[in-house]
Image (cartoon, rainbow, N blue to C red; front, side):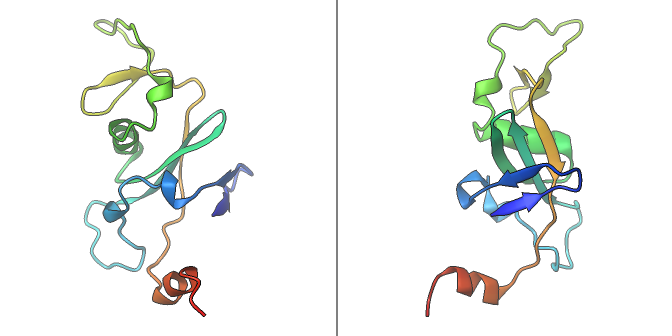
Length: 122
């Protein structure tokens, strides 16, 4: 799948990039009390994860807990007074966010016809 953000940045992603598809609430679902929507998280070499969250901080937490940002983890850090790194995940681990980016992507509606067509059945 390909998508171009309004700022001109272009991404390509597959189902393998999606973390926890069960958290997806389609756009046409009338019940979404926490405003869960998809976010694309990437680095200097492209997409790292598509996650479903209520806000950017939660999106980073989900990506970290899924192991998608392991390459950006800061091994030795001291964040007792002031921390210049992204602290994310259940363990609040430190990550170098110099090259990380996050953008909300459009939330598709559920379509049986599209899903059926993707099966390749003739």
